[in-house]
Image (cartoon, rainbow, N blue to C red; front, side, top):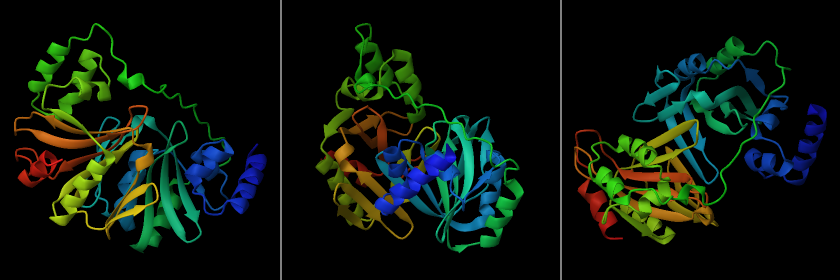
Length: 337
């Protein structure tokens, strides 16, 4: 099986040298993890995720990458030690800000692609949840030490991935007749913390995008992709610090700071700054919403971007911390759209 896959993948790369491994996996008909597993330069590590993450600060200045099907988040910096509450992990500093959901993690590899070296974590369905790339400022000795310490002793053990069952298009937008819209709106208006939003959706049995459609008047607004880009350009023009959330089932990565160099490349809308890059595939966007949620600190406004299946692609907020109201500049930009 592996020899056959190796042959197929080698032939594919010869014919498609510029296709990235995530897209190659889809075209070859396997998962990204399966392609990584057959790489002769790659080393499978023991799935001791918490322990491995505790070693990452020793790598020094690195690039953290988290993505989903339609957006990529790249942030350079130095990891601090992760803290865990059960299977949920937190890494929070000015550079690297992550929320880690280890219940979906399955495998980890040290990957070498030419001169590029990285530690890559994969979910049970074979998709990458988080990658950590060395930079010219990293500590290569620490990388080699990490591999030596966590190298799997039985690397030929088969990598087992689970079939990913995706909801059919429109599932998130389904709403049944027994939804009490009035009660839902009252609970929305009574929110005191944005983190309670998901439990509210679960309580009322309503999908996320449908919730935005039936929200209390004035608390959500559908905008266009051009409206989204206008918001980001205005934030860039006034050097406004914002927050950019991109994630998947295993990891959410957050950038807090200014965005400066905004570039359109075909269907991709990009932020190309020294420390932070974002790549957003705008042709996969089905809806964009301005969302306002009450909190004890006042209204918190976000811009939320969804695909055709109702999956969240990316969220944008004004920079804020608990106990501090959101930026008036951010609020003004959104009111102008």
